[in-house]
Image (cartoon, rainbow, N blue to C red; front, side):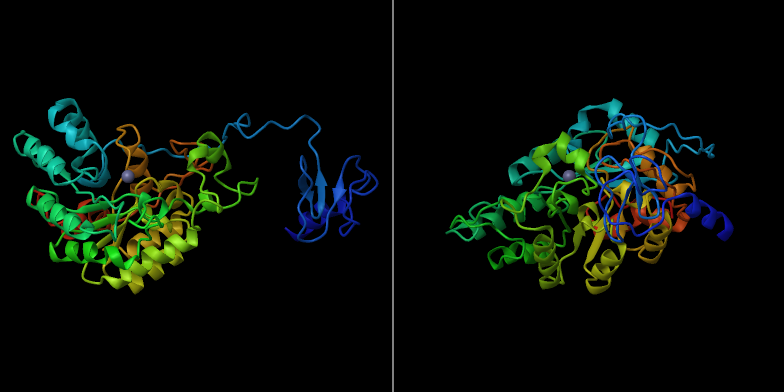
Length: 399
Ligand SMILES: [Zn+2]
């Protein structure tokens, strides 16, 4: 191995050049440029040898047009149907499936037992949805969470109204409270200022959820890179240039760290309330940080909606995490799209290697299977949800 390495280096240019452009260095190869330790290659070049940058001889394709064909001949184990029945704790609009037997058949084929629609709305809207669900043959397949109107918090009567509406929504059948990302980002207090997640004016809502014994699923902030400089080092560059509205520049929004701090502080202030961090609390790319959160706060669980690409690119650490914290993870998907669920089953259940994700613009990398045990899969798919969300249908599940 060493001999090969030396031979390769020996063919390249001598390291430690002056840094600038110039055809003279680079082992005599025209167009090569040497750089210093810690420097990057100039645009249009790559580090072809240690500290020596080379341009390709043909014009380089852009990131959209470079679609290399993998020559890996890997074993493939597609998983069209989850191994155990599943509660999807994070969907939107699924309460409408009550009138749609095709959707229910589709759920059966995927082994989706219950969908939780987080867009239940206020008490009246929850009542409408739950009345329809209770009157249907699919009443054990769908549940809803309520929502709170945050704008105007701190103003006269806001607290009383919000509390009364949440109490009524739960009486009307809501089994939890969903917090959308606008809280902390764009919702405004009565005095016009930004409403932070840990603002004392909204503490009573978190305490009320604890008193009502309903979980709170909260989506705070966005992926870390949505708040980072939008340069060629941003791993969501393509997504942020296809959907520019997703970008959260620092001159208009609080930072990612600020939002995480506010949310985690709020979790800590309300130990008697059960919180579910939607999208793995955006810590899926930093599992050590996720572990710290769970170690510090026993009232918090995490769900996996829309962050499968994080686990699929670090399958060893993820499998360890899901095994160690097997009582703290739940399945969620966010967008109901039948064709996409099997990607989740495949990452969780198999040891498959080097396969594609369904959204190349936000995970241009390949996925790998975590090969979780049956015991962990059951907790991830339904057992933890049944404990954290007692309003779910509790009977008929495999032991
Ligand atoms: Zn969502």
